Length: 114
Image (cartoon, rainbow, N blue to C red; front, side, top):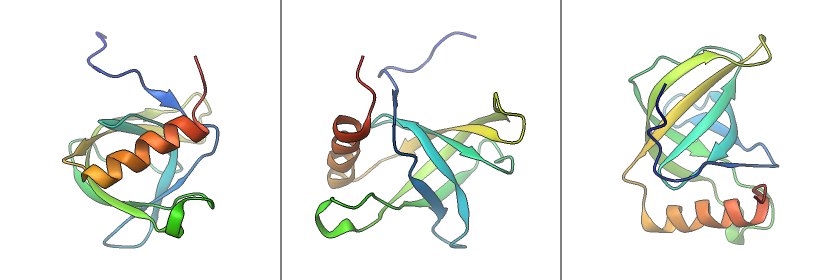
């Protein structure tokens, strides 16, 4: 499969919890992220080509420690390397500039370095 991503995806050391904004259910844990997309690990498969309103709980130490909410479309889902979990790729849909800043901060503070 040809790589379509424009930005190098950054793996996070700290797995952040991501919730469905509408149902308040835990969707999964953030594994890696760019300002354009993200990958989650979940216990249940996530339907591809679906738009979600997501809320990500931020780690302590971020000013105000408020969750960020954003729309994202699920692009793919398959079994993870660990067969008890599923990996899902999402495309962020028009993230707010302040959310992009938080994502960049997360990458800088918690992301693995090359």
